[in-house]
Length: 87
Image (cartoon, rainbow, N blue to C red; front, side, top):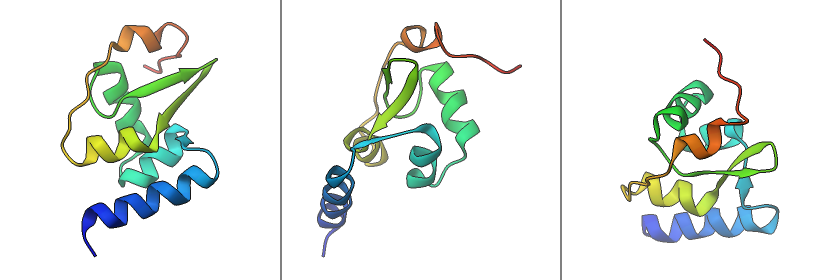
């Protein structure tokens, strides 16, 4: 079994429900802390987040692509307008 096969199986399981994960779920999926994802999101780094209303979500395909080294670029200003920052 290759890593691609394993990733495809994980993605298929996730898509049976919703392919969108919240920050806590995405962090767990990647083995990172939530704080790391929040910080990266503010810096325009890390996997591409999406805003669904007032919620930030990560698509599992974006997480897999980022994990495989396919760096994502996005505009953090697009997300930060409605996202509270803790200082």
